[in-house]
Image 1 (cartoon, rainbow, N blue to C red):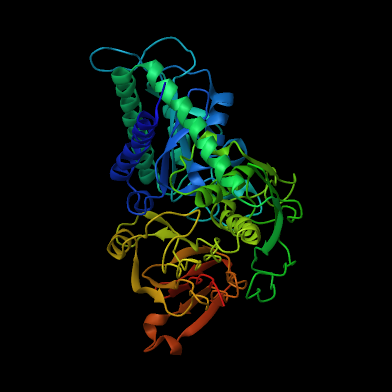
Image 2 (tube, rainbow, N blue to C red; image 1 turned 90 degrees about the vertical axis):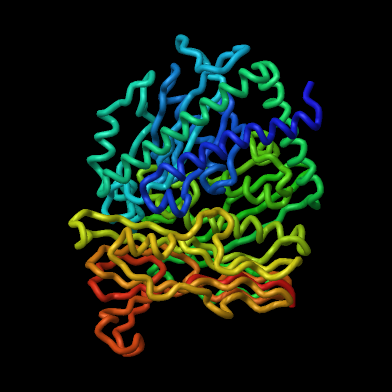
Length: 552
């Protein structure tokens, strides 16, 4: 029977498998987005698909990955050793098309010396290992594969759950189909190989763990860890006051012009598209009901339900603390209601590219906003509420090869009762690094002219919100540019009398290299979402939002 000591040891043993997978993926990847920014996640599942452990990677990936494993089991099984399933279809276990997920069954055997994969006939796997990596281009109508699309078909290649590797043999036809539909096939080939290498490491480590401790001991500790996480999650929820707490916020789109947001704990806003939630705490259970959320839109800001599940799990982890293992047990006290056909359950073929990156952030904002009514002295003000997605691509005059760039930018974090918000950081559902300036200028025909904090952009209050960033990128060649951002009109809310953070700004300076000063150049303010062609000498200036202030 597991005791407290052995349970903690196995907690870290399981997590270490996912961590080592992530190290392998990052070190062997080709693209800057995965290699430098670490826009990937790895996790470990039991043979029935329940999440067992994850690395400290990207929250929006990890909370949604169980849907990918379920889809692989239901669609691509049965399995034999050496199988690897690939998928990215948001309506079949994915989140948005650039996030390509691999899922591998792991069959292990017990041996007194060493460890091997069990090469037997098809049966229920002992484990699954999974990785999700954001590939900087998967085709579609714009480089970066997050266009301002109305339908999923315009966002890129759609991959249902299929076997990329079957019984240890690579399915070359599937790989060639993927590579033929992207702008940068060499990067995609290298990044997929890095994911496969990560899976090899995960399978090998699991086999070694079972060989060392025995299958019965490993399985007993896995089940005990899930039960322990459920007890911790229920205890954290039980500490909240019972009640129903409602909150609303908006996602601005380029053609909308919503009013300035509130400066303290809010009166609801009603311009579409609206995100609305009622969080009901009853005993040791928590239910989030998104009734009142706007219907699905003709644009890329729709999100699939797995994104909402991921956001809710993230909020619970924040409330419960880092001691909570985020596995299937932790999700047990949570329930959701999402109106079918809404922005958060749009149904195919609605575009969903921005749901993973933008709407996920704002789901966190509204759930925290509701919980601030239950816990006014604990919940921080809103963070930047956007990932500030930048995509551009074209042909590199230095090599003649096609290129596609994708990045998200940090901003201000919301202040809280314990102190000011962090500045220039990724918030909530994002946990990536930035692309180093040296790498960016080496890999793409651009020059970074400025990169620093956006001073005084955080909201005022007893504790100030964190400051956003300013980044200026000069294009050295023509390119197709797409911006997918929010919080350019609405502002991150403050709490307990704190002021809102500054809204972000997107600016394009035309032919800046021909002018003595930027102010003398032709300056255009771009909307929250924009798709334009830029020329050599143009400069993109992104000013990211500041976090909300806390306390009057």
